Amino acid sequence: MAGQFPRYRTGDDDLDAAIAALVETAGPLEHERLLFEMVTSVLRMGLEGAGRGDLKLVSNTLKELRLAFEVFAPHAGVPKASVFGSARTPPGEPAYEAAHAVGEALVRAGWMVITGGGPGIMAAATTGAGPTNSFAVSIKLPFEPTPLQPLVADGRTINFRYFFNRKVTFVKESAGYVLFPGGFGTMDEAFELLTLMQTGRANPAPVVLFEPQGDAYWRSFRHFLDVELADADLVHRDDLDTFTVTSDVDEAVEILQSFYRVYHSLRHVGDRLVLRTRTAVSDELLAQLNDEFADIVESGSIERCEATDPELRDDDVVDLPRLRLRFIKARYARLHALVRALGREA
View 1 (cartoon, rainbow, N blue to C red):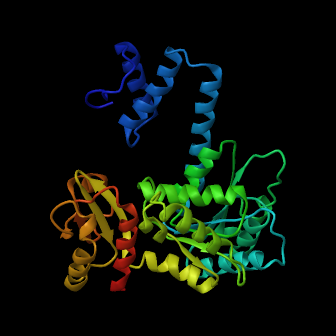
View 2: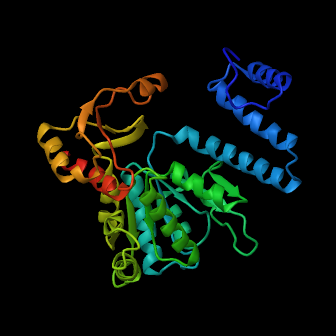
View 3: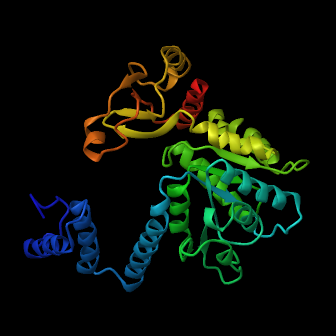
């Protein structure tokens, strides 16, 4: 390994040298320093006497995530929507037929679909999207079959042991989310998403809560959040604007599409938040954004900028236009609104 070892080491110079030599032998590899640190962590657990159960947890976690990265890597350039909902919804039910239609519409719009690999809503969305446009991110449960494996193309199914790895994969690989009515699992996924959006642990992304015509499932959910959480100041009312309730398939897909018409991605660089956009933002819209979103700017203003040095070093979409701001990190729901506002330019 060229240069000095990373700061994070085993504490044994000979062992550190052996790890560096191992990484070099496997190379040439990108990100050698990170690989050094990963190997170091594994060996430190052994040196520190981690128990068999802990080691199995880490080993299985790494193996599962490595497989997930491998499965999704060839399709990194295609936006994907995770579709959640009940495994108990049978064919013919309005929610099932709507999920099938959403899967079809997403593919027509250039998206791929990720589901939990089970029956019900998951099977509906998968059959709507088709086998070559679907991924099954399953969980091994003793009481629930995973019939989607024949419904997706070979190599598109991952059977997770751990829920947390499965959730990481959903969030890491998804550019948008469509949630249908469901049970505890769907509620868990809904609150997980809202928590990640609220705290900035997930990048802004469109979240659609879909209920069939005549069903008040998500409107009742929204009412509960309004009355029991927002009215009691347990959440900020802006936090409830990170999702949209609809019963219209075309509107659901349009919400996902419009979110990314101008916005591309973001990155924190030092004390600034950098927003990368697909097209340059006009002077008029920039002035509107500064007026409307002054409450999330710690100091200064929202301004145009060039690619930063860290982005240049990482070759991180350096050709795209950019905006930057000193973002108040307690206001992620408002950041979500700012991203949506960028779509006015389209």
